[in-house]
Image 1 (cartoon, rainbow, N blue to C red):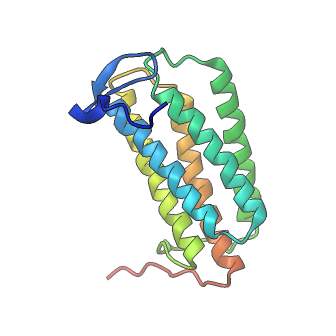
Image 2 (cartoon, helix red, strand yellow; image 1 turned 90 degrees about the horizontal axis):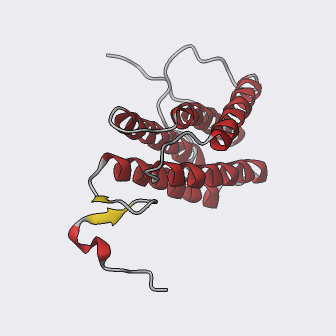
Length: 181
């Protein structure tokens, strides 16, 4: 099987289910942004020293592959198995956020997205998760999307923020407080 088909050379692609759409469609934009996030998490993982965190992020990459597949499908997004899975993952994220937050200084101000290379990359990954969420919201306003995907992406961005702070703390990088003028 060839990696190229030449089908997309005219700005069209096929969704899972066979429908042909513009590569500029909301659905393609949404699952493409999820793919960007997934790929960038691979970049983050490549630099991380923390084995446990690498494994967690790899697990999240697998989730994002499932989510991207669901978003790329034109089928009605009523997959209860996926919804149950995402609900479980969101609960896991919330428990992890709460547990890890106890190990971090309480935030009394906004912080700038910076720190170590890995911490900064995690901050950037957080912004990609937010962008993916916005793209899926835009799609959901026009077409059917599993609402649990939105919740997952929202909570994932929160988790990535906590991971960025945690990595910076472990690497002894001080958080930079935002200073207004």
